[in-house]
Structures are given as structure tokens and as C-alpha cells.
Amino acid sequence: MIRKLYDWVMRQAQRPNALWILCVVSFAESSFFPIPPDPLLIPMALTRRQCAWLYGVLCTVSSVVGGALGYYIGYALFKAIGMQILTTYGYVDTFQNMVQHFQEWAFWAITLKGLTPIPYKIVTIASGVAHVDFVTFMIASVLARGMRFMTVSGLCWYFGEPVRHFIEKYLGPLFFALLVLFIGGFIVLKYS
Image (cartoon, rainbow, N blue to C red; front, side, top):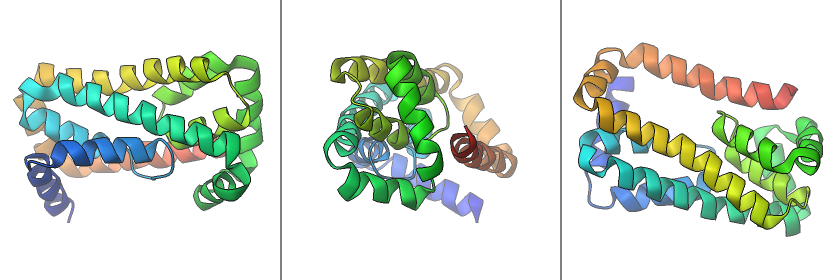
């Protein structure tokens, strides 16, 4: 099943509209969508290495713009939409701690949490609820998301085919490891 899913994603990465899908997923993940753009960014960057840096930049820009929507949800629409998003993902209990951290250490908290497997939508909504200075929020978001996506793109560009062969050879264990990281991000957020 994982092999079929991998093959499907690789085919999607070669489609003409893949770039738009990447941007939409990156935008949505920063404000309300549960799945990060990495499962599409990596195969796209491996399939067309000459475009890896462009994909990283577009993923970053889309994520930061989506983060602005997440910030707005936290700032102005928290009761109507933000609380429902947090409830859906099970983050209501730890959310207040995050808001307090953002009020005290806005730039560094956003930057560090933006690099982790913690879903970025939680970071953006918390920033809005904490009324973090919007310029500070945007600068920290560009830094965090840029470092994350440009690192992924750079690794795909630099290692190219050997990485693709490695992924294809160890697909099962890699999928399991990514799943553990993804779930671990939720757990860390829930209990931090």
C-alpha cells in the first residue's frame, strides 16, 4: 500500500499542476489543513532537481502567506474558527502555554516552533491570539519556514538520485519514521 501511495505521489509530482498543488497545500497547512507539504515537495524536488530551489522558495512563500491567514484566524476569528481547529487537532489544553510563550518570546518561539514537526497552523493561530506584532510574526515565519523548506530542497538538489534510490529502497521504514515524527510533533505540542 505504501509503495502504491509513493508511486502515486511521484506521478503527481510530474504533473503540470503539481506546482499549484504544492503551493495550495503549503498555504493551507499553515492555517487549517493537517498535512504538511513535504510529501509533495520532496518528490517534486527529486524528480526535477533543477527546480528544487524554486520549489523551496514557492513553498516558503505559500506557507508564510497561509501563516498570515492563520494569524488572522487567531487574532480576529478565534472563537468562530480558531477554537474549532484546535479542538479538531486536540490542542486546546496546551494552547494557553503556547500563547504565553509567544507573548514573552515572540520572535524566538515562532522561529523555533516553525522548524519543528509541530503543525505550523497551531503556531500561527497562537501568534494571532497572543497579538504578536505582525511584522515580528512575518519575519520569524519567513526565517523558520524558509530554513525548513530550503533545507529540504537543498538536500534533494545536492543528493538527487541517490536519495531517491535510498527512499525507494527503504520506503517502509522511512514512512514509519516520518509517521513517528509527525505523531511525535503532536505529542510534544500536547504535553509542552
